[in-house]
Image (cartoon, rainbow, N blue to C red):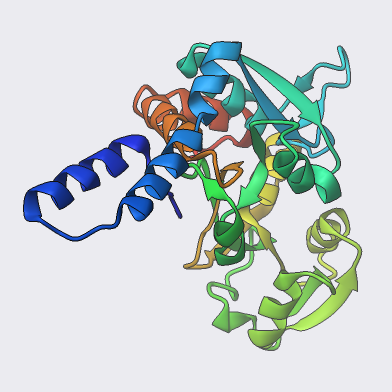
Length: 273
């Protein structure tokens, strides 16, 4: 995670410079102190008593409204509420379309985003991230009775159902599979269940959610990618202090089993580590 200097770090560095006689200009020192002083992200949240979180509200099972009461719920929502509780503040959600969610963060409409934001090098250049609270792999989903497909290499000569614009289509093609194009997960998993294709590749969280909701009788994971995606809370560049406090809260929630419990509620497995 890309981090800027905290006030404590700046003061420690200044003390070392003074003791070792390094020649640091007064202007440079003042600039560093000013930068640290501007990071009031944590104190502002604590003083207001509210952590404002940007989320879609239409992204099941991470952020959505229940069919009955209409209340906002989901894995990311519950994790955010638990983090806010650790900070001793209330969680307040600002529902925003994905296309505008980063602009909302930059404009200060909310303190952070909780919406399965993957950590990427490009995003780390522009934002600050907490430690991850979701990890996932790509998986091959096949019928329970299938014994031919045990790895991505064994997809060669097989047929998979994939959305043609997805990275999973690229992986299937590179693995030597013949791809049948579909609109999304619902169609692809239906074709696997009907025996019309040999397999489909998708995100593990998608399969776990489907298994939790439907039982996914007759399906299994044949193989997983070695690479894992990591999702975390994301903050504006001046939000390092708040990001570190959220990371500390996530560590506590991991140790006391809260994240594992929330994970099990939505996925039937611990996706938080």
